[in-house]
Every structure is written in C-alpha cells, then in structure tokens.
Amino acid sequence: MPDFFERLEMLVGQVNRVVLEFFKWLLIAILAIMTGIVVTSVFFRYVLNDALPWSEEIAKFFMVWLTFLAAPVGLSRGAHVAIEALSARLSGRVNQMLQAIIFILIIWLMVVFVDEGSFLTWNARIQRHSTVDLSISYVYVAMPIGCAAIALVALEYLLGAIKGVFDPSRVKERQIDYPMSE
Image 1: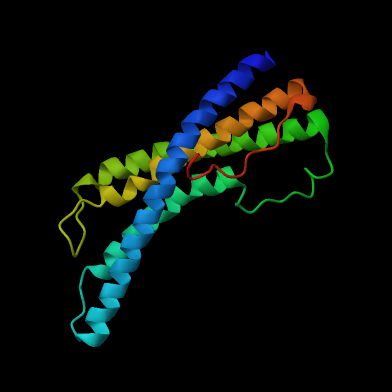
Image 2: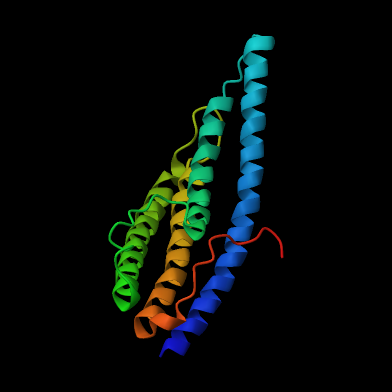
C-alpha cells in the first residue's frame, strides 16, 4: 500500500512542479505589470497632473491574481504561518497522522473555495468593471484557480503523510522549494 501512495505522491509532485513553475513565472510577470502600472500612474498624476482613471482598479485586480497564485507557491515552500508547538512534540506515526488530518482539512477547505469561487465567477460574468469594459469574472476566476492549486499541493503532502503513517522511516523531508530551472 505505501508503494501506491509513493507513486501517486510522485505523480502529483510532478504535476505540482509544472504548475508551480508556471505560476512563478506568471507571478513575476504580474508583479512587473503591476509595478509598471503604479509607476505610470504616479508619473501621470504628479508629473503630468492628469491621473489615469483605470490604473488603481487594474492594479488591485492584479493584486488579487498575485495573492491567489502566490498562495500555492507559498504552501509548497512552507512559507505560510504554522503553529508547530504540537507537531514538534509528536513523532513517528502520530505526527504523520496529525499532518494527514491537517492536509485533509486544507483540501476540504480548498474544495469549498473552488466550488464557491466558481459560483461567484459564473455569476459575475455579466458584471463589468467601472473603468474598463471587461467582465469582473476575470478577477474572480483567480480564486478557484489558486485554491485548486493549493489543494494539489496539499494532496501531495497528504499522500506523503499517509505513506509515513504506514512506515515512518520512509518519510522524506519536504522539498520546500521547487527550483526555477533544473
């Protein structure tokens, strides 16, 4: 049984590496675009004395995308806030069971967010931005995409924890960073 979980963990890990690599480059592009928009906005407002009406709103929308795409990358790197007082005192199977429970809860919550985010995205398709003629669903769709990616990362870690419940000696340290290029 642990071999099945190990193979599945490796498969999900390969998918995660591709998705997170794409997200990292997308995050770099979004941050560059956001920075360009804000710098341009400041230049127009204070140098040319002619504010751009769309810049603040578009920058906020990019910030939403930045948040939801960065969250799975942060989870994969172990960068989210964690309370380790209990898990640091546990070892072996008990610690792996606790980890499995935590990742099950994360996956469950992300499935709820994907469902609700999809509902919101679908219902927002007819709403338009106030300063640019674009559907607001383009902003809302960041939630189900980001939460689905978080669930995938959590699934990889859940499979590792389940494997560790069966055989704690086969637990590998979590890879906290997927390299930008190999």
